Image 1 (tube, rainbow, N blue to C red):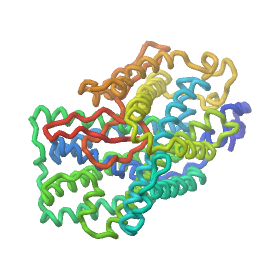
Image 2 (cartoon, rainbow, N blue to C red):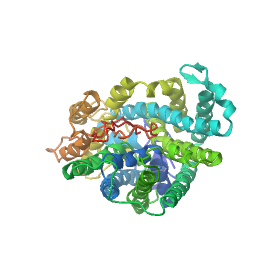
Image 3 (cartoon, rainbow, N blue to C red):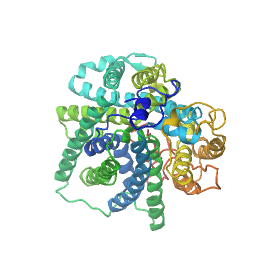
Image 4 (cartoon, helix red, strand yellow):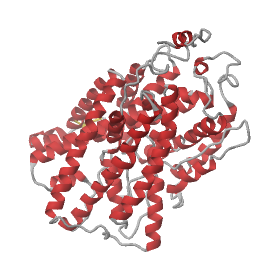
Length: 517
C-alpha cells in the first residue's frame, strides 16, 4: 500500500508523496515479518566475528581477569541494548529507514548530510571487511591445497593472484545476496550467526580438555594495580559503547520490519546482553585456557585452531570465520549505504541499486591498500566515523525530548515550503548548529595523535552533554571512534565506523590495533 493509498484507506485527505523523496524502499514498510529470532540472528551475525574475539581476549592480556572482562562488557552491552531500543522504537513505530528518520531532525534535504556520512564510512569498511574475509579463505585454500602457494608470488594493484580469487569470489557472493533485497539479507544472517557459535563452542571444549577442565577466572597474564584495573574496566565499557554506537545509529533499518515493539525489545535482549556477553565469555575462556595449555595467551583464534594440527579442522574453521565476516559485513556495512544512497536520488536509486553501487565502490577503492594505509584508516575513516555519535545524539534528543515522539510520517515525504520538515529550504539550521561543533570535537581523538587516555569515555561524556536544551533547539552528543583491539593479532574484522584510539598499554607492552565497523 502506497502512502497515498494508506491515507485514503484511513479516511485522511489524499496525500501524494514527493517523488524526489520516496520510492518503495524508503516508504513505510508494508511487510512486517521479522520475528524475535531474525533480530537475534542479526545480532549474532554482527557480534560473532574475529574482531570482537580479539577485543575481548586483548582485555585479558592487558591485565583484567575473566570476571572483570565479563562484568565490564555485560554493563556495556546493557547500555547498548537501551540505546538500540530507543532507535528501534522509532523504526518500528514509523516503519522508515535511517535517512528518512534523519529528516525529522535535519529536514527533508538536510537528511542527506548524515546519510552520506554514514554511507561513505560503510562503503569503505565494506571493502575492508570483504578483504579480511578473503584472508581467512586464503588460509583455508593454502591448508587444503599447498600447491596454491605459487599463486602468491606475483601481485597486481597490491594483491596477489590467490588474494584476487578469494576477494572477488566473496565479493560476488555478497553481491548476489544483496541483489535479492532485505529478505535475502534476513535469511543469510539467520545462517551466519549460529555458524560461528559451533566453531567457538568446539574450540572452547578442545581448549578446556587440553587444560584438564581447569582454568583460573581470577588470574591474568599481566597483573596490574587495582586502580589500573578499574580504569581498564571503565574504559572497556566506553569502548563497547563507541563500537556499537555505529549500528545504533541506523538500527531502524532493521527494526522497521518488526510487527511490534515487543519483538524489537526481545530480539535485542537475547542478541545483546545475553548472546553478546556469552560470546565474550567463551572468547575469554578460550584465551585463558590457551595461557594454561601453551604458556601464552593466544588472542588470534586462527592461530589457536592451527595448533590443533588437523588440516580439515583448519579449513572448516577458516570457512566459518569467512562466513561470519561476511555476515557482519552485510549487516553493518551494506544495508545502511543501500538506503542512504537511495535517499539521495529515490527516483533512480532503489535499495538494490544503492547496494550494487556500494559493492562496486568497495571494489574500486582496493580496500587492501586502504587497510594497509594508517593515514587513511586513522585520519579519514577515523575522523568521519567520529561524526556518527553526534548524529545519534541530535536525532535522539530531538525525537524524544523535543518532539516527544510526535511525528507526521506523511510529511517526511513532503518537500513543499511550509511543510513540517521543510524547515529552511529543506534544512534545519538548528540541527546543523548542534551537530557541526560537537562533530568537530568528536573527531579530535581520531585526528590528534596520542590523545589523552580519556578517549574511551568520550562517547559516554558527549551522550551526557545531550541534555534537554531550551525550547526550539537541538542538542548533540559525541562519541569516540570505535575501539582498537589492544592485541597484536590478525586484523580483526568488524564493521563500518572508524578505528578507535588504542586501549591503554600496560606492562604487557601491547600497543593495540584493531578495526571495527
